Length: 270
Image (spheres, rainbow, N blue to C red):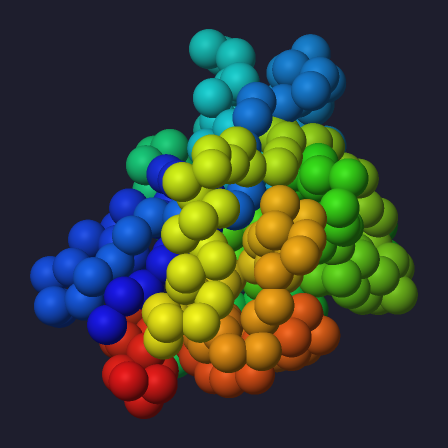
């Protein structure tokens, strides 16, 4: 069975390799491009006043990677027991891995339980809500989306609805929210061979693996005449499932965003 992994190229590699190792014909088919921050000076500036925040929420692994790529040499460290004691909020394992690569003290990190039904803003809020009180300041590190949509990235919690939902709940609890854009999402570069593969995969039983509804919007934009009524998709969130069905995918299977769960869902479509 062929599986097209539509995550950005860097994030797709782990899933592609795991699927290949499990015996699938897995290909990276990135439907979101990732570029550096549109205003690097703004990111560097917020590093300079990071101590004024109680927590930093990273919407994705890309948010972590690009934020820390612009960290000044003497900037604040995320260290448990420090004078600032700033927390790092993430929605799932991918962002957690990125924080570990950035050498963030794991005792400073809050995320949903690995057995949570979803890795999203709602699950994260259930973990951190008790910390948020009047005057609690949260910096949300996010990406700037393509012109096609406000949601999406490598994870469902990174979408616009997820960001707004979390920020609204912080504010409702009396907290304060500030945003900084650490990277840009963009339309993928598509060759004629890519479009031919997409056309074939729309009807030959290939499973499309979506972890972002922006990826679906981009697919529709680059293949505007394509019919999707015979296409199959495995998606990692109910919002993405809705986008896939609205796009015309007739078979949509929702899965937890873990490799074991994804493989089980893919197998169910075989």
